[in-house]
Length: 394
Image (cartoon, rainbow, N blue to C red; front, side, top):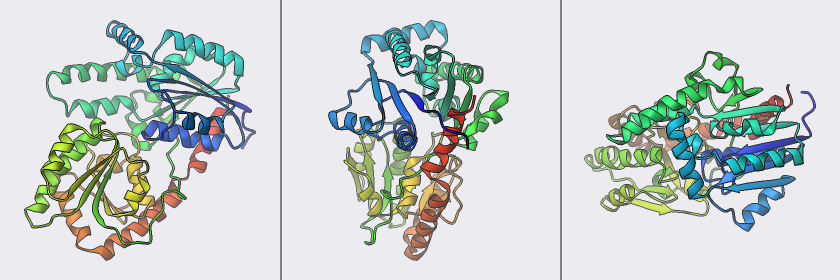
């Protein structure tokens, strides 16, 4: 591999800590790897203020940090502009004229050899960095993500999401001409990109911190686990489906598994459904999820709306858990049936859960296979080297 660039500027849609969302986790782990042999600079827009500990953790890895806060007024102004310009609203949310000028000055100051943009949400800042190697990480195919969400929305929300889908299709299609190189998280997401040259987009998968996420020696005390941001619509829909349709099928057979739903800011629907069901516990805003993975027998992730790779599934597998999920969620991971059981409807998912809870030996065997699978296929170091090559290739 050719010598890496000495200076890399990362342009992010959010401050990467706490790493409690998929894009933040991906950025944080990539920074940790890139910082080993490169001089890094981080520019991000944020609607939240990082605390002193989070700033210190990032500062220990990078040379300089520039954060531009998004105010309610700036977001509203950008949204109104997008209404008439045709820009996707989730891109317009992060667009800010003052931040654009700040990035111009920050780029001149650090003079990077290459610039990394995370997600199409930040592509609007491409012109601020001048004529440099620029790599866009699509991460997920956002137009496909919007399409999946559109199918679950009712009137009148569906009107908005149909418009957003058309806007995102048009916006993503323009990306290849603006960047030196681009990458995306999975084969499934690449295939969904709305332009003919999609095969020129490189695959840069996620990884797992295998030292942090590892199996426990003790027997689990919880049967089923779901982990995720419980205010995020795809996770809300998954939990509601689990509680309304999947668990009742087990209850009808006299099977009452203990269930933990672990994550931040639980939606009111999740709280209300969980409160009315036997054996279901909602644990909000926990400081660390590792202990919950290690104390569960089965990870259940009945995702209806998702693109990219489900970190919750990879983390569970690293902790030695068998996983019950949907084809939509496993497509981005491609885990074999030796460690992941896939169901397309409530009956199939309930049958898989019943099968695993009734056969602890099988569950343990699948858990060991799951751990081996992520060890072999999901290394942050290995996948970030692909990104580093792109940042070093004109």
